[in-house]
Amino acid sequence: MSQKLTWVRDEARKQYTANFNALLLSVSAGITGTNPETGKERRSGVVEFTNPEGKVMQAPCIIHEANYAKGMKTGNSYLCQAIKSDDRDTVLITCSHLVGAAPVSAEAFGFVTPVAQKIENPAVAQLV
Image (cartoon, rainbow, N blue to C red; front, side, top):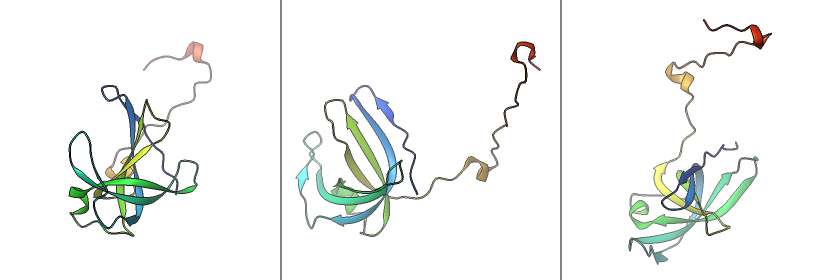
């Protein structure tokens, strides 16, 4: 099932981010690098997801060691984040330890969206 991505602008970092669920296919056997800003260790991985057009994709990702240490396993779905910086043409994917799940509709919690009424003649429409 394709996922609709909601991109959020972070003006301070000059980037867009979007959260999505992905299946973790593989993880490196050990630490593959360190975040230059925070000094935190990370591993490399590969995730599989369905893009907004419905195409199944595989892509590399970064997994912070602190997340991996919480028991991440290949074959499970996790919450990931796509990061598109202004200075890059590529998207960086980070994979968290949070289990990915399908979104729940507002209707499941009793929220009902009012149905818009069609106005035949907008010129004579009145506010109630």
